[in-house]
Image 1 (cartoon, rainbow, N blue to C red):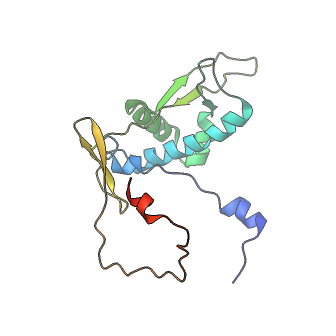
Image 2 (cartoon, rainbow, N blue to C red; image 1 turned 60 degrees about the vertical axis):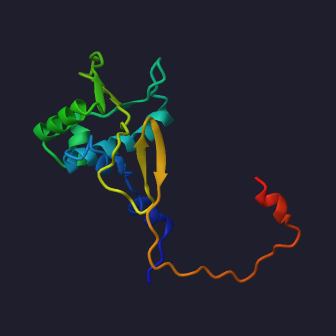
Image 3 (tube, rainbow, N blue to C red; image 1 turned 135 degrees about the vertical axis):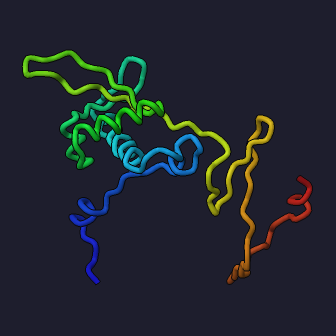
Amino acid sequence: MKRITASHYQTSERYYKLPKLLFESERYKDMKLEVKVSYAILKDRLELSLSKGWIDEEGAVYLIYSNANLMEVLGCSKSKLLSIKKTLREYGLIDEVQQSSSEKGRLANKIYLGELIVDTPLVSKSDGGSLKQTRGQSQKQTSPVLNSAPSETKSSDTEGIDYEDLFRR
């Protein structure tokens, strides 16, 4: 076995967070996978924006990501990138604000990301249960437990517990 080194961890053990909501919500179920991955990559970039203080006067965090850099990260053509951005705009997940030009040329747009919207019902239920909407309230539904083995407890320190008080609540 080759042990994971700090160098290995810092280069190959980094991941993008892909929100499950993009797969479980009726709202996003028809969105192409490449668009979902692109959203996750853009959302990952928010940490850099926060560290650089890229927050507007309304408190919204924005990205500065040129089309050339995005095309390189996503491994796609300009037409594919524009198609991805168009889809993200249609879902309300991206908004771009053009910055004024500088002496060196045109600046990259400010990119604002939209929050994912939680709709019910969810397309698929996870093993941990799901939320069911009932007349304006959410109720947690749990999945049934099948063929569960009893848990083993090696010791149980119950000395000093007032059971009568415990069950009065």
